[in-house]
Image 1 (spheres, rainbow, N blue to C red):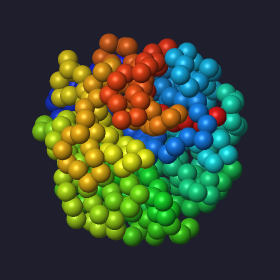
Image 2: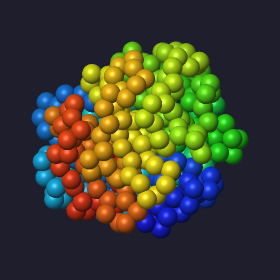
Image 3: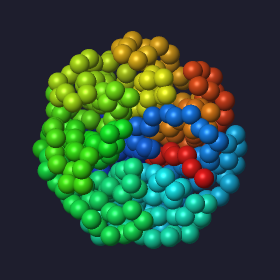
Image 4: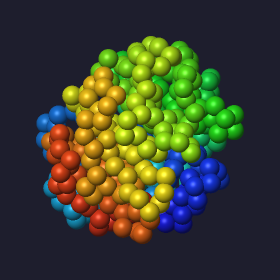
Length: 357
């Protein structure tokens, strides 16, 4: 995929068309990732962790020691356009492979596939793990979420209530599951919220103000932040109070064609922005808790930012895609826009970031 995919997606952005076979999240597919990796929240590290980068462009996950720009190891086995990476509480790595319709699992520190999860998986752009290490997979084409028992490939439960092409998953601190629905076929994006019990009953659906939601973040009070694209105009971030479905406030200051969101441990909101025109670079804008005005703009080293994650010492890491094949991950000290490190070795269309053993 890589540069060819990027060229197609840039064309889609400029024409307002969606890329066949993937959601209309531009210039890359749905992020999570992670994302984690879709919409991460920073927490203090007890010990520095290694950085894991899912590279959609060369079908790898590259691993870097804290402070290093050279790969410690590279995972190749079982990977096919990896779109999301997550760790369970025991340090096992889970990778979503939408081009293969599976999720591959790796033991801590290993590059060999431990097991592959396929039953019920189709076009799996995003994954998530609950507090019990049960795996949840967003199946875009099937408009389902499938659940798998911890440590197994066994399909436990499939639910579809309210789902319309789910592309991003996120748990809140009480165990409720949030799904961003692209709604491409229906033309109506939404966020659906499911209860913390094993039945995962649909609690509510958020549609107010949403056009093309692409990322979600949840603060410590369970307020909901949704990155909302509005082509051809710049996008916005819609904010909803806990357990509510109507907009509390809208953030537009400094927002371009946003791709993903993150919250740091102080509740500051980080927004990854890409430009409308491919000749320009993007940035990351930062907002104070409860604020709607840009507090800081990070631009040093930023290209087209696709994924955000807070890692060792709460440094911000940004996965960047370039039109010219020089993709990077850039790193910034907490509370600063100063570029501390650039990783380019092994990076090819970074789609998700995570930190683990």
